[in-house]
Structures are given as structure tokens and as C-alpha cells.
Amino acid sequence: MANGTVLTNVGEEWVAERISGQQGTGAAANQANTGTHVGIGTGTTTPAKADTALVTEVETRAATTVTTAGGTLASAKYQATATVAITGTRAVTEVGLFSAATTGSCFVRCVHDVLNVISGDSIAYTITIDPS
Amino acid sequence: MSKFKIWFNRKFRKHNATLQATIIHADGSTEDKGVIATGRIGFLTKGR
Image (tube, rainbow over all chains, first blue to last red; front, side):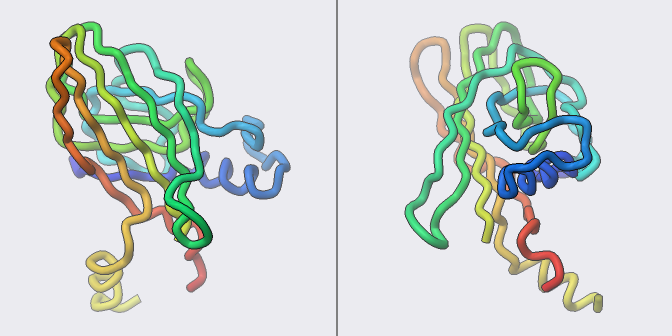
């Protein structure tokens, strides 16, 4: 396992679609999608461009709030925030940015050090993409 | 690409995708974990 954050192949197509406003050749039309949901999991496989889902997704995905953060010109960044509610004892190690509340396209997959949480906790995530 | 260039890029190129997390415990306390994962997106840097 190696920690990291990857814009997946589907994510790259998503970026192109968002900029052009036109659907690419992939199956999903994501040109109007802002990255609406964040999901979490307990998988530890190193993130890869070909990823299309989390390895072991748990809990219900949380809706995101998406902003262009960080200011103007070169400082501007895509930022998605979401708070995922925890319903059981979990060792959370992966996070995904998705196009829908279930299934959908996985634009970004992150693997990180274990966050140990229990029922009643929640985790607030901020995913930032800086096109620099 | 030379081994030096690969090493240089890995070491010094900007991490432009980041993940931050804060655990909000059931008792209301918070635990800021800061940046817990980074990556290089590179979608606008191809061909450089």
C-alpha cells in the first residue's frame, strides 16, 4: 500500500468534459457533474489511474459542497467538501470523489493512513484539485 | 527520461491534489488530521 491521491482516467475525461462542455467517448456523461458525492472505504490498494471505484466501500456517500477556492488566477482551485457519517467501528483508509450517491463515476481516489472511527463519529473531508 | 529527471520530478514537482480530513467525534470534539494524502494530477502539464 502506498498513500496518494489520483485523478483517475475517468476523472481526466471528466475534467476535459467540464472544460469543453461536451461528452467524451466514455459511457458516462459527466460534463455537467461537479463531483457530487464523497465515499469512504477500508481498502488499502495503492490508488491507480485505472481505478473506477473504491476497493472496499463502507458507509453512505455524503453530498459535497463544491467551490472554486483559493482566490483568483493561478490561486484558484477546485475544492469539494463533505462530511461522512460513521455508523460502525471502522478503520478508514480510502476516499473517493464520485458523480452520484451510488455507483456513478469515480473521479478521484485517495488512500491515506488509517483513521480509526466509531459509530456516531463523522469525518469531514476536503478534496482539492489545483490545476497548476 | 533520465533517472535524475524522474527523481527530480518526484521530489520537487508540486503536489496539486490533496486530501484533508477532520474527525468529528460523537462527543462533539474534533481531531484535525490535516493533509492526509497528496498526488500529482498533471492533466495540464502533459507534454512539458
